[in-house]
Image (tube, rainbow, N blue to C red; front, side, top):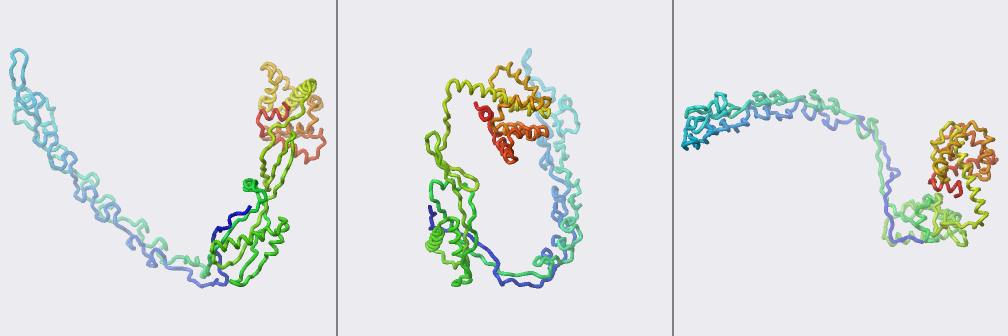
Length: 498
């Protein structure tokens, strides 16, 4: 399978042009870029102070603009009492300005209002100088009774003393001077960047007294990936497979447009033949690449050609199961597996009635033996069997009634460090026919993420029953790690054969 060769991926490469490097002497210091050698602070120009940030140099209070007084907020600056509009009088609340009240009891008639004395109005309670309650004051008042009509907050002036400057008219931030200390130089007038010297370390040579100049070049790179796959149906799996490197080097380089500096094409072809068993595969690639460059219209003069080759090892596995044929592929160093179909159920022999009966008793015996082994492991270092989830799973798989389950757990308490290993071994002798017992034992020991010295000693005795070398024992431990990922029901099936 080949890629489309009508397009090329373009990139860029930057490098140093040989023979262009030159060394130059340099002054270790240069003029300060902030003050340009003037030495003075650029914010205050050497004076040490700047315009006040509040009044901007005017020295006047910003709220009253230097007047010391502001417009009265009660009367809006006109000086009149807002309650009575400056008249000093308000309508009588009893007669509503009529001066008379209609009396309806007995013989109906009009009577003079006693509250306002027939005047129809009363003195304004806001601007009255008496300060007395209006009702008491206007009782029997004369027609001429009235308030002052002036705003009580500003006493008719229309102005109030400025609260910001307390009537001084001066800016409180600078006390009326209009100036404040320059924060850039802290008032000393010197440029803070060069500390008033006018000089700083040369940025070009970094104070070394010399610097280099050189020329750079930018080159455009054209890259194309070419895949060869004998079986197109493996393409998706190969994207996940980890390849093995075969060749990575510059194999052709030009000294000038018409002069080749070196050419290693024969080495590439030889390497291709060794690793792929097909020298023509690279020659096909070279031909296709040149064709792609021609089609793309690239006119650049080549500088060098580099090649990177990788291969993905593929192992094909053909097998049959239950009279059906299957095929699987294992690809790459990371073992990616691809297959169209895998058996989901393996049919085993069908036992007779007596074989089933024997298997039932054998499974139950092995089941109890595994439970005893788990109990002995969990208690050999003093831990409680009640803390083991694994033991609870196996006991529950027996499907006993609650009373019998509790009785079994009580019996299991005898399987502890006090029981001699020889006595314990007789109770689990049926388990020594399978190496899987070692995996189960190690899994129980590591269930709490750590193996105690007592558990290590017990595991050594169990391993001695099989006369295994250390490598095989380590393999059993790895199986235990794998089984630790199983769910509860799968764990029972794996060890109990249910």
